[in-house]
Length: 576
Image (tube, rainbow, N blue to C red; front, side, top):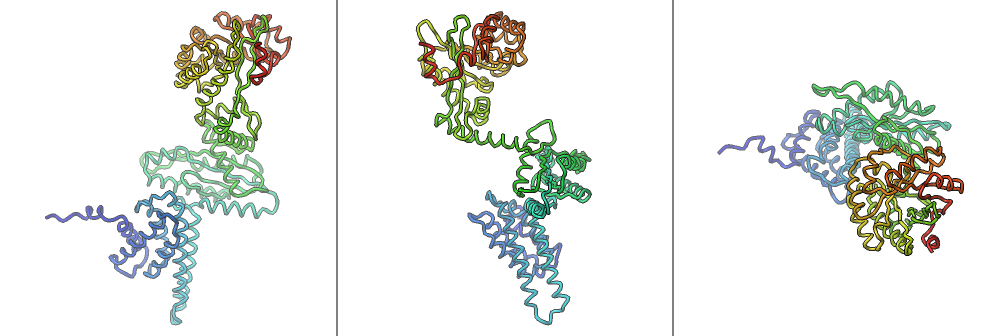
């Protein structure tokens, strides 16, 4: 029978034994091992299993690192090179080779290696201190030097990235803390957080080994830059690097620092036959050192990087407190909106639309308002995009339509129909589920669909898009559409003529055009009438404006002159 090949045996070897074999070979390459390889591997296999169990267990167990470090010295594997090789191999391969899948395994690796190197150095120190008096002086000195080197390598391993060789996040925060604490007077500080452009795509194309080689190359280039320019550099992990400059005089110094980094990355990297062009985006921060903390400095600079990454045009963004406050407000409103809908904080106010010929209220526009307990009244222009982002638009339009339709039905009088206007965003109009939501709400409230008008933007009805089918489906239910703020943007009149035949019933002339010459307003009114549409003037605030738009043949008007947005009960008296 044929014996199994060496490769087949290796492939069937347990992961811990394979890792221990690689560990033993690495030790044999860098230092003298006072035992046969066959005796070293079982020891290292046992240590590997203990370390893997500490990383993947229910609780972190740094004591396993302490036991492993002590066992290494007891096995006379106590040279500085043995420590270095062991730390690098455990950090770089143990989790993957032994299949440690615990989500906190990476975070546990640092403390585990810290205990390992600490026990290693303590055991070496113990050996040096228990040497008999006849140990030669130079051997004792060598032992002390080994301890110092081991402690130095331990500190280096804990404070430096294992791939790029640059200081890591912990070292960066320590450096920032020392920099802020040591400032003899209120000074300034500049921080540039770099993100390599398309690094994930490059890693996918090149493979992990070449991806690590790329990070080492970037580390070398940034290290050269720090030496030449007197900067401090760190590697946050992955594709993010940081540059720090003290004593800046303004944001221009930080922009210059980013420019130098891009220049350092600019010349092609040639890992193979095809050169790769490197580039980066950056978040920039320049501020006073007074009142700053290391965590805050890094957090705000990374926030600016997020802004830069979200902008397809610019290569960097500068941190601005006003923009940060706006982001915080959006985050808070997004967080609070679902509960606000449950508590009824989002409600409707109604503004009358008056027919100019007899000043009778012929329609009302339902306007959404959010009474936030902390931020006060929040308008729909702010919270509707947030509802779209977190998936609440359908829920919101359903509840608003049911409430508004119930009110509108109660306002109807024989021979005096009152139309209900409700705003729809472009995102809502593009949702194929909208017709079903509208149909169910009309069935539940009993409001005739012919009394329902949805207000949309010019772009929503004049630009060909997926929402066209939804618009037609809603129109098929019997509801109409009004083009809101007409004249404020650029309109595709041919497209407007096409959709007006099936869906659009009204053009609402934007309030900004009330200051325009009569010929412009008259032209828009004639356009509406030429298309068979009703012309409604928005933003009428005075008797003079009301008289003017009536003279120019507008059909109806809306504005504070005729009534502000109000709750449903006060509005009821207008229909008596």
